Amino acid sequence: MSDIIHLLPDSIANQIAAGEVIQRPSSVVKELVENAIDAGATNIQLIIKDAGRTLIQVIDNGKGMSATDARMAFERHATSKIRSAEDLFSLHTMGFRGEALPSIAAIAHIDLRTRKEEDELGTHIQIAGSKVESQEYIACPVGSNFSVKNIFFNVPARRKFLKSNDTERRNILTELERIVLVNPQIEFSFTDNDIEVLRYPASNLRQRIVNVVGKNFNQQLITIDIDTSLAKIKGFVGKPESARKTRALQYFFVNGRYMRHPYFSKAVTAAFEPLIPSGENPNFFIYFEVEPDTIDVNIHPTKTEIKFENEQPIWQILSAAVKEALGKFNEVPTIDFDTEGAIDIPIHDPSKSVSQPKVNIDPSYNPFKSPSSGSSYQRPSHDWEKFYESFEKEKSNPHNIEPDDTNLFSQSHYINPNDDLNNRQQTGTEMVVHYQYKNKYILTSVKSGLMLIDQHRAHIRILFDQFLNQIRQKRGVSQRALFPEIIELSPSEAAMIPYLMEDLDAVGFDLSNLGNNSYAINGTPSEITNINAVQLVHNMISKSVESGSDVKEEIQESLALSMANAAAIPYGHRLSDEEINKIVDQLFASPTHKHTPDGRTIISLIEDDIIDKMFR
Image (cartoon, rainbow, N blue to C red; front, side, top):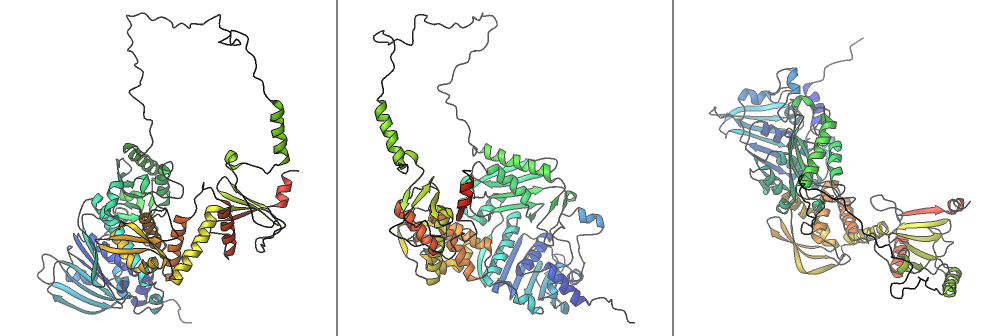
């Protein structure tokens, strides 16, 4: 009987490793740029074509490699960063697995040109599918020039499941921003299809954040800087007024590496809770420096999830640091004493005698005597009969509630009480009232009980359907602005505008490019009034980037939902009878009237038997 266990060929083993390390073009970008940083580069150029499908090129001015090192770099488990097992727990570099380059070479065509400063000639290596096709000496600048072409050319199934170019480009920008934000001392540039779209010059940390997010954000940054025996924490949090609906501007870094950490995120969010509205998220850029042996970066293949040895005490340190920063910059409300009217407290003098205070009373004072006539006090007379008449009138008409007195209900005759959700017919004989309860809910009677409608969410559902239909039909009406507003975008946001412009135009936005990542908002959708157009456009771009939509329909839904959330009737708004009728009518005209587009409940029903049990 023959043996059945055998070793895999290197080409197959490398493809399996590539599936773990290289998931999409952005994975290649991350590995190559991090290698350039570890090589001591001060200038890194990223060039892509067709969102990385055709070309991913990273050029750096780092220390380069010798001919032997350049060849060994593509062997599995070859690394310059580990000598013993102890080195795994004291890493100060970005990567060490020794699998990135061989994994990339297994699924793409590689062209490497590299030279060390002390060498006269550099090395040129060409690899395709893990096979070295050529290696020769050439003249080239100091550093490394990696060109990765035709990613997944020999794994058609993986190439087939790549997302659209827009999505893959967003993923590349996201990875680049995470690296850029933690390496301000390095100059970065990004060229997309032969057009340079981003350039970040070397700068300090604050300036780098402003360059990435946008220059208007400079005034919103509050400094954090605390040094303890467990961790050194520095960075910035945004002022409460800069909070956003999305979490796009929430960054944690540890020892120069981007990480996700929901536990630490709660520490920052908790510090902001009294200062920002519910549903909004603070912005932060927080950098941790800890001893490498107190963290484990190997719990996730991409090293974005990191385990801390001292999570709980660091959580407390982080929370205290954020609260201190907010308080230091007067972002936490404080009591402001009026010093002009302050009481002068004398200094105690032991040589002076202190007498006990005396209370003066008037023994002749009689509170039951009138001060003018001196006669005994008499109770005022009341017309009890008129008071009783008013009570009887209210008793005979219990539904006669004055809105001005209660400020709880607004009533509207509209629907048949025997109608259910799916069979509603207006009749002239049997009518029931709608009530607006506390300017937040619409109450109405249906066949099976009492229905409560959330007015804000109902309006979101209605507006979402309208905006989405306008985008798809390209018939949105724009209302021209008397004075156009200027919106300044970050480089990454500006890079997304060309891919959203068609849908923004279809819904009624009129944007014109002013250059330097600035746009003029010349018109807004006619259905939207009394909103901050600049903030709305920011939110729509952030939502689209954060959702990572890979098809046009999902991008359109994201834009429609952002606009609906901004334009919907807020809680606390008093509705007229006509407005209540219109909301109820339009809501039930929607095929999905029970939930908002993002899944929140619009309608709740209290059934008759539950109401009956309350009075048993």
